[in-house]
Image (cartoon, rainbow, N blue to C red; front, side, top):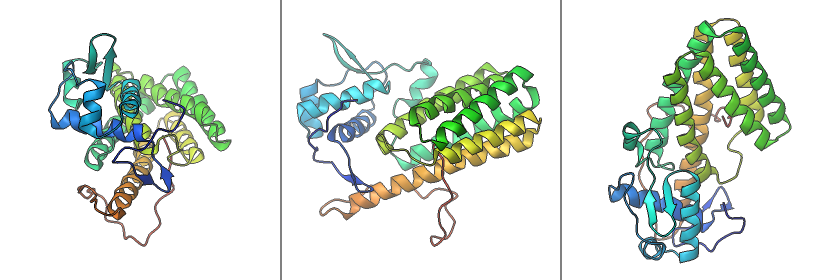
Length: 283
């Protein structure tokens, strides 16, 4: 992503007191435009100038927003040909995800619900089927995530985090489960970029401790426990995303002349508001 701050677009806002660069807002608006126009993978988008006019942004900011989405794999830029909705890496089955909105509460909650189903079952099977070498890889990557999380080494933690979840997928001995874990985490990464824009979304150390607990359950062959711990691990991420989106919508609604879009209440949001949110992780 570009290293310098861009002028705000008409939709620029502040989230949790931090300025959101205009190119991030353009990226978000462009995804909405793709969904509203029902564009499919391979469809051509307007030129940079055309998109700038549609989105009410400058051409430079629009260009940087397109770069963000290109880096996330949502659009492709072909020199001399134009800007296109990116082809789904998994083929036709993934084309249904072409309109995934990484900052919409409904979409994020559906994604995390799916991730809970997939990754908890993957952890269950890993606990039942992992070989000694696979158990060692899971435990080593979990410990590495804790070590890097405790010293707030974000890049090293991200690498350890990816290694841990992939190692659990390998130990499940099902290539489809492993691929599903990778795909759903790639989609979640789009929400990370557009919602947290470089900030750490939760406690790295908490995530590392959760990884280690899952690893210990897998090593002990405790399948139900491993699945339960994985579900709890993802639940902490869900709480963080819910809070981030609600904070963002609240800030938008506070601005004169603007209303935040309505979002459905999450199905499990029944906890009293006076209770503090649970400790959160980033994984």
